[in-house]
Length: 331
Ligand SMILES: Nc1ncnc2c1ncn2[C@@H]1O[C@H](COP(=O)(O)OP(=O)(O)O)[C@@H](O)[C@H]1O
Ligand SMILES: [Mg+2]
Image 1: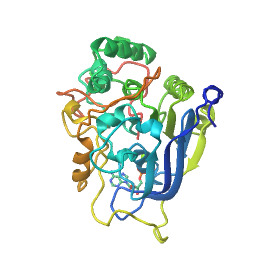
Image 2 (image 1 turned 45 degrees about the vertical axis):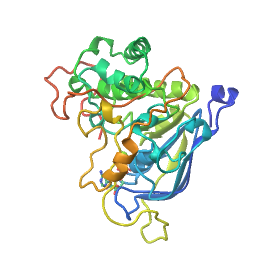
Image 3 (image 1 turned 30 degrees about the horizontal axis):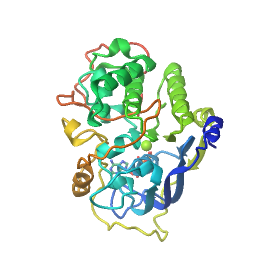
Image 4 (image 1 turned 60 degrees about the vertical axis):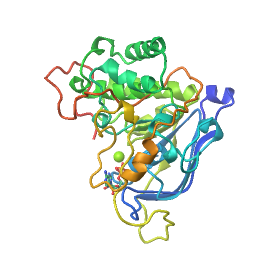
């Protein structure tokens, strides 16, 4: 159900619609589906299911980072705006460049370290707004506000890899919010977090929902679903014996595309890990900068990526993790 504020503002239109959606990581091997999904403005959709059910794969597919293996994901005209794509359907988020996604669909991956690339916390929050070409003053305004909102001001110059689990999680949520996407996809954002960070993340998600964003949250936590009045979408592994219509032939793994525009990327690591990629053709295609940003702003929002020279995963902590979160917070 859209929040009362969203209803009052006439929100609640589907921003993303999926019909007969089959998702997977390996061509020809469905992980979950077929599913019908609506992501509406002003509403939280809670994706639930047991480990390995395909929740993260579904989230990445709705986020435009993985291709549908069957069926379709369709973005509304409002979400598409004046975007143009060189190939594919303009209303298929997988056809959008990483840059086009920045203001349309933001993603917080299950493991924050898969998208932390900045040299500093401030740098991490600046990546998305810089990729959008926002003026310096606007970038500083957004970043300062997020630092304060996320209680990271004192850590603005710290290396993101030295943060605690809770701080890293807040940072990736903040980085997504910095570009103010209309749809936000968060994969287990509260998993392993202490009570303070849990409450902060839930409050942030409620805020962006009330501001009209369509929010998808993957979670095992009933308290999250209830605190956010989420509409639940239970996901079960695909029945491999059933007749699924697959639009992609068997063979090869599908790698998620990066959450960071190419010009902001120091290393090809700003996405979930992928072994034995055969999907690079698709990845290169969608990563091409499109130069067609357009979305009107909302008051809060998320982001991706990081500047060159970023610390590689594992190059982390020199023991300086400040209090406030639980290390190893995600799985
Ligand atoms: N990076 C990956 N490469 C290949 N297969 C994967 C990858 N990640 C997950 N899978 C497989 O895809 C299926 C769905 O996984 P996932 O979407 O991560 O489930 P959930 O998030 O519900 O735990 C599982 O069979 C899992 O083993
Ligand atoms: Mg998962």
